[in-house]
Image 1 (cartoon, rainbow, N blue to C red):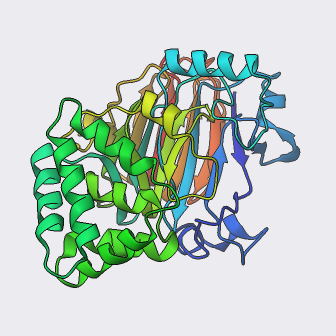
Image 2: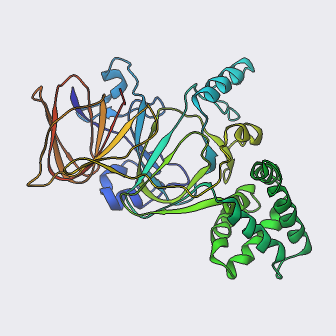
Image 3: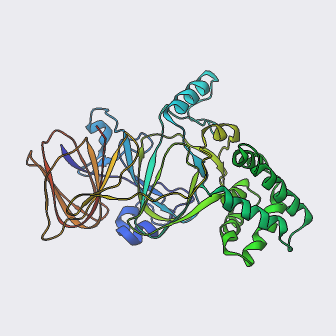
Length: 386
């Protein structure tokens, strides 16, 4: 089975009025051109299932007889920061889902943390310059930053005392976790601290992100937590893999995101939504160090894989050209293909064929023995891993 699919953008407040339209053309956001388009989902997730392009009242889920994909492919466009967050392991997700069910918390309740019993590993591949916070900085860098805050001459005594207290905690056993917990629990009483913190951006660029975040969320613990996190910049084509427990926040940019099909998000700041510090702390991985980018692996000429440590999906980027056709490829599982540049043609051994232009997508089942990609363009292909 090979069918074209489409969807409408999800208009979250942190989305962009320009990124998707400028990159893919205005048709993708035509339904709400003046709204901040944040994401477009290509999959079967019940929150926004894709529809068949030729039969817009038929969802992909219905077309597959109710079958759900193990993954979800998205276009993501951020003009403002997303929340600081982490996702649970499979075991944590099951335990949290069962616990909240036993407590009688409705699935749709605003204070619900676990909407399902699945983990949510994810990868983001940049289409534009992309900025994110990801993982904790090395302890030595956090220590130096807190020392500089403690000894800075342009701040109040209270600011120095708090910075010194966090530095003292950092040097204890499980120190990073203790610092994280202390900052996270200060919700509502950090206004003065973050206001002073922003003045340091006048002297050092490493405080500039905190200054930007404080303009949006003054006094929020996430403003301070951002200083503990790696500030990462991706160029187009570069990628980050975010496993369970990884603390992160996308700040700005356009990308293709693939994730396990789950809604489980534990938030820690930079959001008006529900924050459960205790549950977040249970899932966060407090390993400190610089975060490596995903290293693409050549599979064939014009075809690379982004290796991810998950059994939920595989991700490839295909770049056929006029003199380079990818023929007789095999799928590990069912797939969703998104064209991000030029024009490509997909065909399979069942003699099915679709042409995809920039911003168009297709679903391909595993019932054909082989498939081929031709044309001249770029496409991302996400498949189930088995």
